Length: 79
Image (cartoon, rainbow, N blue to C red):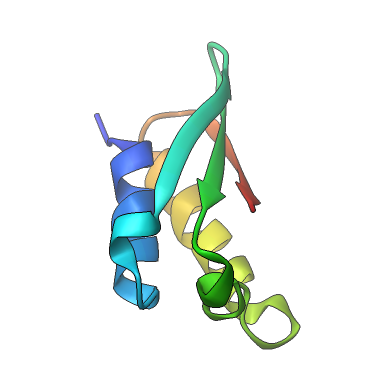
């Protein structure tokens, strides 16, 4: 089984300048869906979101692909 929380944290840590400030919390989990909240340091917010949200969209697509093996629907909130 894929650790979705750890996968999201690893992706975010690879992007930001302050990887120690990356926090991923599970906000809601049910039988077939999971909601994750990604928090990063304020100066790193632009790196996680990207121009016109392209990086955030790519992160969400990667997480959906990772969740595909678990049979769960994943939603990512970036703060």
